[in-house]
Image (tube, rainbow, N blue to C red; front, side):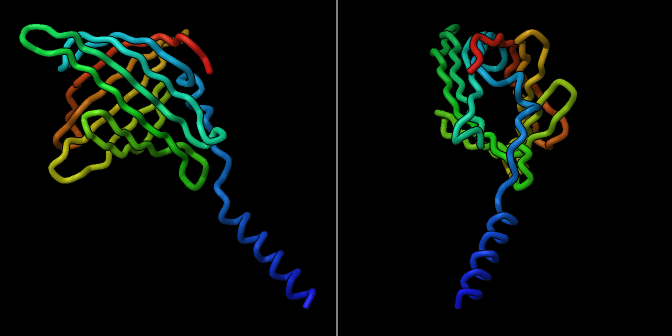
Length: 171
């Protein structure tokens, strides 16, 4: 009886270790962790806003919150945009996916790729929906260039919004 109990405990421990998620590596995100203040322009017009990338759930996910405003002008009302994105690791511990929600009712699933000084998030292709690409590029010394693009075919992208932001706080 004792040997069956011991065998069961050993088997459970082996299974627990084999299915446990790997430790996440957030090294490629270090320059984006914190709070940012920015200005930009694009289809909605000239505007400004803030965003942050902060850890949550014991550093198992990265949460981005963003707020931007585009002032009223030429018969256009004030536009206020708020969104939330969660960056999460795959089974290897690599932060390779993100999901985005905003106050306009949009939900976007992203796959993440890494370049030299940039993090590129590209949405999954969905029939009759544009493909979106969100790129953060480190310009140096706490300065980040952000570009949000859209494409009908997933190959030819047009810029919708772009701007520079400066890190204001590290958390």
